[in-house]
Image 1 (cartoon, helix red, strand yellow):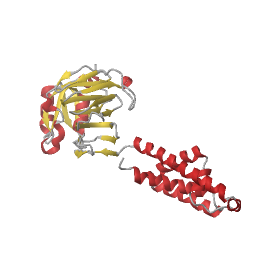
Image 2 (tube, helix red, strand yellow; image 1 turned 135 degrees about the vertical axis):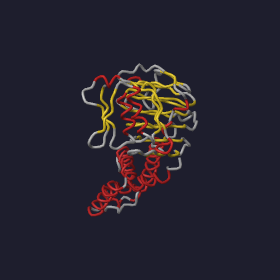
Image 3 (cartoon, helix red, strand yellow; image 1 turned 90 degrees about the vertical axis):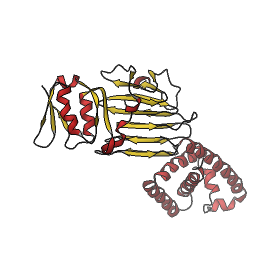
Image 4 (cartoon, helix red, strand yellow; image 1 turned 90 degrees about the horizontal axis):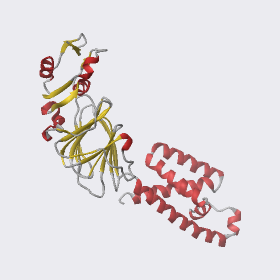
Length: 337
């Protein structure tokens, strides 16, 4: 618990200010209250410590803590020094119990938390403190939180590729709106596009739950929808069965080279998703002709270098019954043939 001393110190500071805001003269109380509000507004860590301090204060009714925190005594208290000494001991005990509660709070807090996002054509790679290698595709947003007994990533959009550092005592879970994926140590990708989730495994094994059956972070999970091994993938969402399908393990995360040497690999991928993937790198991008229901049902299989979108556009009419037209604003319109 490396963070405990610094955060316990914040809780202690918050307790001191709380005690001063409830005791002493009016000027001192007002000053303490003003400092509590100001620090909470500018320091998120102190604001969180204040929440713990208020819980401790309420649990002990505040009286013993006021006695233990060196506040100016009232006239009545000066006449009752023996009583104050007893209450002071009670205050020390209460403070000890309070810091124990703070320790539990610290244990439940993430040891590392970060929100990550990439823009147009941007690939981002980083190594998490646990040793896990994380890569973000273009136009991706994900939140990372590492706890002492679990690791969580919340993928809002786009695609991530993970090479997970093994830790049997701290499983890693990727959360999406469509479902969740849990692993101990493996290399795999998770994508969220067109209101569905795509999971592909290059190495190791993962368990996948649909959203309705997905386990909560700290609840024993139900049986997964599927378990995937190396060279397997599945899709969850409208129009997808959630059944495992084969995939070349070398294709998993092939986009990581970006514009320098990355590839976009499609396996019977719906055309709207193909367009969304390319638009992560192109500006102006691709458009599907409006009200063209036939385009929604088309699926594409193939591999294309990200640095050469022209090759993709040239091959598309030869692969699918579509035509591609350049628009006045520079975008490309894909329409049924």
